Amino acid sequence: MGLRKGQKFSFVRHFVAEDVEAFAKVSGDRGIHHMKPDESGRVMLQGLLTATLPTELGGDLNYIARTMNFEFLRPVFEGDTVTAEANHRKRFTH
Image 1 (tube, helix red, strand yellow):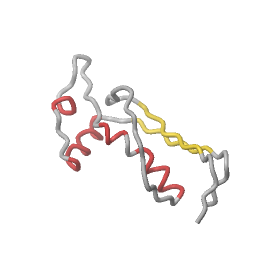
Image 2 (tube, rainbow, N blue to C red):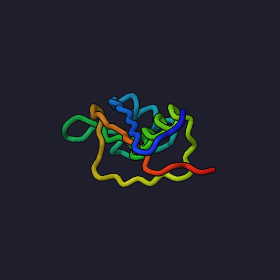
Image 3 (spheres, rainbow, N blue to C red):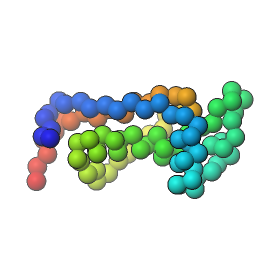
Image 4 (cartoon, helix red, strand yellow):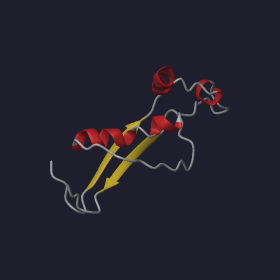
């Protein structure tokens, strides 16, 4: 798939408690805030679990990323839905 300047791509994911548990098993990130529900009864997702969303876009586009920068503005909890968006702004050169 060729990428054109101005193209936009997105991926939406709804997170559930089982996602947090599975990521804890794979990553070893078992911080108490990921394992025990807060006062609202929800557990907080691991930051790097939310950071996996761009990998779906990369896989769909058959694109290998060289770098990724993340800024976590607020926590994401089980039951939340997150959208990853990518905008193609410049042409790739080989």
